[in-house]
Each structure stands twice: as C-alpha cells, then as structure tokens.
Amino acid sequence: MSPPAPPREFLEVMTAYAGLEPAYRRRLEGVAPRPCVLHVLADGLSWQLDLPGEHRGVVWSIDARAGKAAEQRPGESSAGVVRLTHLDAEATYALTAYAGDVVSSPTDSAAEDFTKGPLFPMVHGVRVASVPGVPESAMGEALMSRGLPVAGSSTARWVAYRRMR
Image (cartoon, rainbow, N blue to C red; front, side):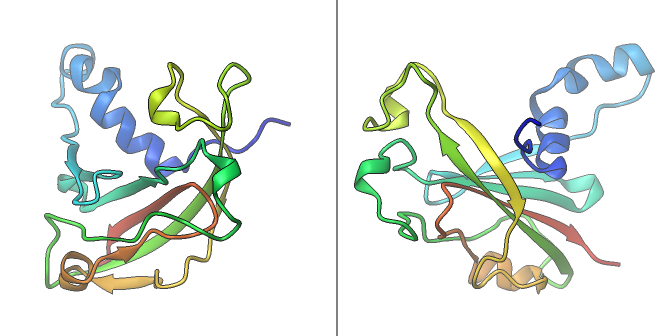
C-alpha cells in the first residue's frame, strides 16, 4: 500500500494553478479555466493557493529544516503563524488541517537542507491533523489579521479553507 498523497484539496488547486487545466481547458472543453491565484505569504515558506471563484483554497507550508532531521527535535518547528490574504473579511470559513512527513530521497543526504539539494523531498504519511490553534472554522478577518499557526511536529502542513454559506 502506498503512502497517502497530499490532500485532495491541494491536488485540485495545484491542477488549476499549474497543471494542464489552465493551458488547455479552454481549447479542449470550450470553457474558461478555473482561475487559481498563488500568494506567497510573509514567511516565504508558506503559499496560499486560492480559487477565488469557488471561495476556497489551500495554505501549504513546509518547515525550512525538513531535510535537517538530525538537527530538529521531535515536536519542534521553525514555522510560526501565517496570515492569509484576499479573503472576504465578513465571511466564515470552514478549515481542515493536514500534516505529512518529509522524507529525503535515497540520493539526498538527510543532514542537508532540502533547499540546497537537486531533488525536492517526498511527502509521506499525509493525514488529517489536529493542529493547536487551527479551529474548525474562522472569520475571514481573523484569518487575515491573526493568521493560522503552521507549527507542528510534521514538516509539511496544509490547511484547506472553504467559505461557508
């Protein structure tokens, strides 16, 4: 059995942002592509992939020390809080947090910083996670002003958000 893939919500926004969908959907299906906007958040290691027409998206964050397993103690993280952008301040958003472990490829040294290697590490063991400080729902204003914590023992984290009706 293969390890779980990144969250479905993340795969959907990545397909809309960088897959064949933007380039070919209009030509093949005769419809406009789903616009997906990438926002690099203030910490530089978190990205918000937003589907504005669908009022949903995903925040993806990776710990800067993902490949430095020997230097990182369990439960420790270099990530902090990220503030989302371009949300409806008056709307309530449902939130689902996911976590995964970053495993270096066999050709990469686990002692090296993944940002210096030729290969990006693989994410394994993705699961719905209970992340302290990530509620089941939050107002858009709070997500933009106070943000979401992205700290945790896993090195890859996602928070899917969806505007509630």
